[in-house]
Image (tube, rainbow, N blue to C red; front, top):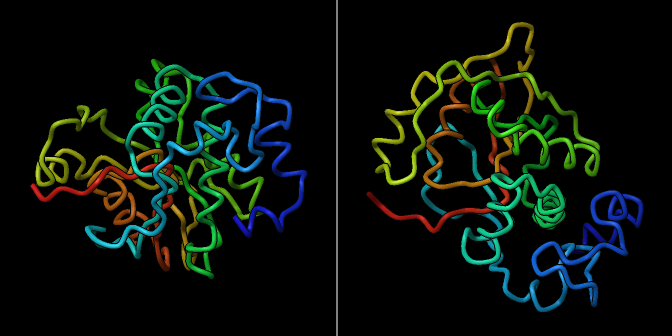
Length: 226
């Protein structure tokens, strides 16, 4: 929160106009400029921050704005599957509240890519949308076409940790001309579940010369060993 207070009004106005309605309930009273939600809805959020355990190598670490429960899950679902972009703005605002836990040397934002067929069906890449908002707010460089998805993998809901690793292995590659050598990358995605997808992206980026890769997500699912 302190970092948001220091950046001034212009970024907050860009992400969540002061006269906007609450992105969850639609109410117009007591809208917070740092969340885009009314006070009642904001109190239902479950804040996360640094993810302390279960972060797979080669990720250097991970953080999320919210736990993927109740209000956090609703924000992601409306943004990702119903294209309610105001919920994406709210998630970006909430992610900015965890900005101070990113490695100090972070210098490049990269979104987790969607396969072209899935992006065409959905109409947009939710990670790339978040990445664009965060880049504008933080001033960090962004490379939206550094990674590409080479396989349209099955959805991973219901898979075990090992099944997720096997499902996603080899599903990403560096784009032609992408230069990540020596960069301290922050991977952006909507949900951290087991970290399998983010770890596979990190493996490709590290093989391409990235100095480090950290994951920054909107929500994190409570970790379960499976």
